[in-house]
Length: 383
Image (cartoon, rainbow, N blue to C red; front, top):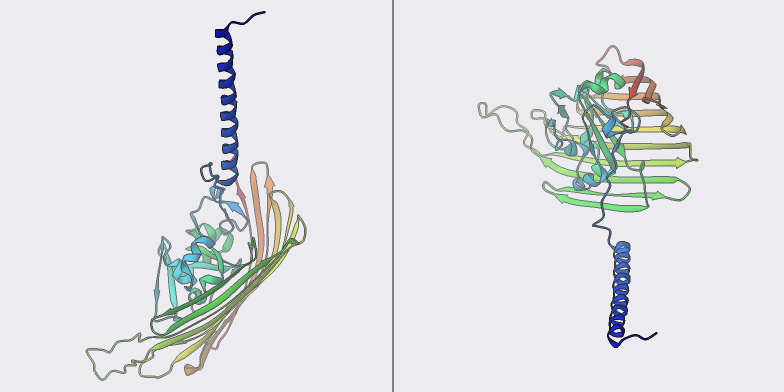
């Protein structure tokens, strides 16, 4: 069989083109594989639905919650280093506030027209407020020791928390409940009026399911003069000294994953402060305040989407003004059992709670009360 010269040249050209084509394909595949392994910024990103706890008292997707909920997560809280939880909240939509004076003085929140007496504040699920003022000392909680804040707007929370949540619910989660890796942080700051702030926190975790979080901070300032002279009466008592403030804050959290079904943990947050304020011509008028909350829990997840959590908590809010020999010491003890069970039509949510509130003072005839409650609800799932 003979092949012409023209046919030979054509066959040679086709062979060379085929070889070049295979080389180009292999090079492109290699480049694509290399780029894929190094840079995936151009790939589609999937954003998972955020989980909230406050709206139903159990972990629930935001898309399954009817009431309006806002979450200030740990990433957003980094912008508020050196500030307090009150300063974080007052920048959230639908919330306003007022303060009676400088740092540490009594403040009040307003959420959609409701004041702090109708807004329930929780720390890791435990009630945190004063029975005398009716409000919570959020201006004493440093944002550096907080992992996230959930805000539930409106009266929907009153069905599972009670009448004190008719204006909404604010739940503060301390660091330690969601530790992904060991990390450390240090905060230091200097401000006007001789303000100095410093603190440190550390979170530890290991392969055995243990997570530990430790935080401490100190804040002090010479303060400002919160009063002005009465122009209509030059002889009226007038105190023109600066009103200083000083506080120390510590928090600790320990969580342990026992196995795939059981977990347990405990956390505590404590703050003590001294606040100076004006009262006519009296000098060096101040009050000492201690606030804090502690809780321990056991969580049983017996099947996917079903769990039971038993929790005990204790909180305090003690205000002592030595100048007037007055004190208001608030204590709250809380025991709750909250569960959820996966059903064909959604998730059934149920719970029972016992709450004891007491105040130690000579100003009230009744200084103790007990509240027992239970609730049940159904959260329909989106298919």
